[in-house]
Length: 363
Ligand SMILES: C=C(O[C@H]1C=CC=C(C(=O)O)[C@@H]1O)C(=O)O
Image 1 (cartoon, helix red, strand yellow):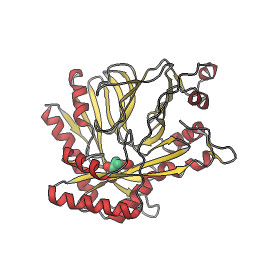
Image 2 (cartoon, protein in one colour):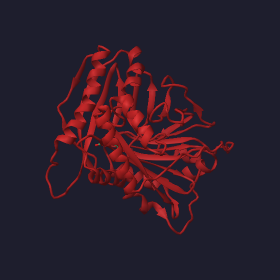
Image 3 (cartoon, protein in one colour):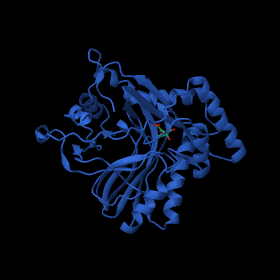
């Protein structure tokens, strides 16, 4: 089914929110751009990391929407759409030497500009040695990461994005919003019963909490915050605290506009850290560190940050991973952290590549 839709340039999304059934959405016409950060119609949205990205916010109309495991989808026979213009994404890959140089640039800029934290991300690209079975890979991700938001998004002319994100950006139901401060990472060590958090991770997480608290205070929104807990994503531990915020419907989009990009994916102060990211990182983040999810209506939605993700285009697969850099960062550990984060997908993907068949999954 998925292969057929890809070959016919048909936009589609398959997603599984944590603890929910899996949904399949197919749009029968080419994708339309969403001008701004608006989420006014029922459907699936994907937004890039920031307004400075060339990639546009996109909306997937649920022309067909069904339970992924239902038989209904097998009966669809959709016509081929015109091939859209292809816009290649700049997928520049740094080696470890360049990574070290770039992180030193971050650390120097922190000193001269008083930046407290900025995320540095990188890409790892590999040729697909055979045909990737997207459905079996997706189903494996669902089983492996029950607490993640797992998805496949086909954007004709761009590629196929897939991921298993541990981070909720914002959910909204009956005027109650939920968000999380998720930051600080330690690799899971099976020999240790619990992670040993250091000042670096605690401070890094605290900066995300502070951003959410000051946003609620500035908009006069009552909120409750949980204590800080350890969150196990399957590959790494993060520090996490939950927020419940009362937000009237007219304030939810302005709140979302100010919340994103949070210091978990940009840094603090926000504008200075964005300037630094765009000066030093040489790849396009595009939809990595953006957000995505299903909007039932403006009063009911769940949006997730696009982390632990990859993109398939031109018979290649590119994995994205980053980390919060602070003045206390140890550069070797940060490099290792990005490898572990990427292993969320890199460990599972090879099982689903059929080396006997050449890759036909391309965009
Ligand atoms: C930017 C990423 O992670 C963010 C989310 C959780 C923890 C993070 C950290 O510890 O650095 C990052 O802020 C990524 O996974 O690519």
